[in-house]
Amino acid sequence: MATEGPGQVSGKPDGEWLRVHPASPFIRGWVALAAIGYFFGRDTFERLLQGRPLMDDMFAGRVPFLVAGGGLVLLLSVLGFIMTWYFTRYQVAEGYVRVNTGFLFKQQRQARLDRVQAIDIVQPLLARVFGLAELKFEVADAGESAVRLAYLRIDDARQLRATILARAAGLEPDPERPEAALPEAPEFPVLAVPPSRLVGSLLLSEQSFFVVLGAVASVVLSTITDNRSFYFYLIPAVLGLAAAYWGSFNKGYNFTAAISPDGIRLRYGLLDTQAQTLPPGRIQALKVTQPPLWRIFGWYRMQVNVAGYGGPGSNGEAASRTTILPVGVLADVMRMLSLVLPDPGTADPARVFGAGLTGLAPAGAVSGAETPAGVSSGGAPDGGFVTSPRRVRLLAPLGWRRNGFAATDTALLIRSGRLWRELVVVPHQRTQSMALHQGPLARRFRVADLVLHTTAGPVSPRVIQAGLDEARALFDAQAARAREARKRQTSEQWLAQVAQVAQVVPEATADRHTPDHPQNHEEGPQHG
Image (cartoon, rainbow, N blue to C red; front, side):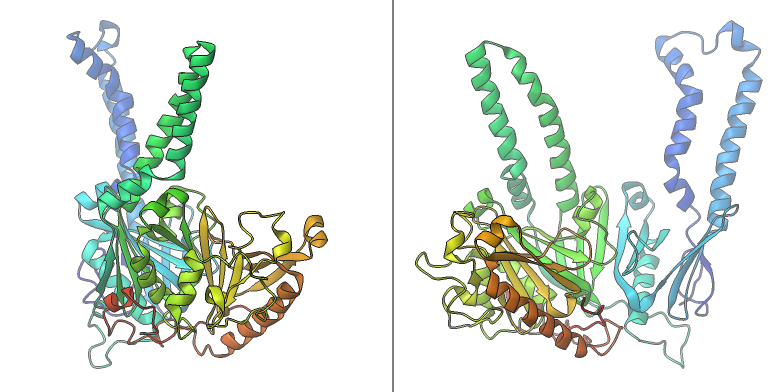
């Protein structure tokens, strides 16, 4: 890696400490500058609009001191920005990316390249105006972004991302041309979400349903009691809904997905744009959901757990970063599944995954009895899913025929929900630990829940109300599958085994989820 100027990455030897763009502190601190201007200029601006003298007579003699004080504060702020820029440096060398910050209190953050989970290019609105971008590196052992580089020129940010991804893959510079920049990997478009579908999904969301329900209740109560004050209770709900709508639309606008040799690339955003590079082998678990009103158009949402992305959507940014498909049809879901799980582990993926998304056990079936627990029998009814036993229909009258699990050679599939449909997919090697849960009622009906532990995120894998014998058998079988899957992992470098991942444009995966690309592997944690 090398540089020709501040923030650039071409022309200097590898391992040299580089600086971010000089405008970076001003883009980060523009709010502070605006606050200073507002504090010192608000009164003068108001007087100008009202046609009054710009300064009272009592303050006229103090004007030089006020101007000097304001100038001093502004000068100190700008000097602080400059010092912040000067002492912020980064380096990519010896298998690490390092960032040094601070001039009074120094801090160094670093991340191992072979532990990088994902790399994001983020462009807030002001940064887009200046053609700059921020790089975020997620690592497995960080609850927040381990390394943030703000800001670089957009072309330099892309080049640095390509360099880091190539180093994570184990690629080294050409010995004859050590200063040559590594090229960015090509990409092939997979899908795009039309804005009209995004708007429709927001209007048919759960929030809209409850707001409409609240509005109907307010009208009824106002009519019965002849009291109009019930309408005022809708104002906070409408304001909150409008803010939620705008946040979801802003984050999901212009959503596109593409595949490249370094992973899945996601782009989205209206004002603030973001470009994620998500290696399929780093995804710990995946969830496909379908709210009731979305079933009218056959829409689905897909979310994932990725180490380093943190908890289950504590804020809007976390929710958007863990969403790999905000709204899509079945063909889009199958495309994304083929990227996340290149080897489905079954000869009939359309049948098995289709049963996971929309399947329902026959009303007269004795679920969990004919099929051995933990074994996916492709010829069995309902895609080989083992569902809750008939005896729990009193506990889950709507869900007992829907709740179930199936195992392929590469992943465990867990489905649940009769109204809010959900399918969870956990690759075997991502199973970190498991636990059997059984409450008083579950003991009475001889059922148990099996909880699979993965990294924090929006996906919480849980087999609901499985027969006790089936749950115990699944516990042992899944432990063995996870152990065998981890033995087949050969490298921490998550790109070393997927060099041909984008040789075939994945448009053909719309009709059939097939193992077009070799399986990604990573050394996972030991099974607990």
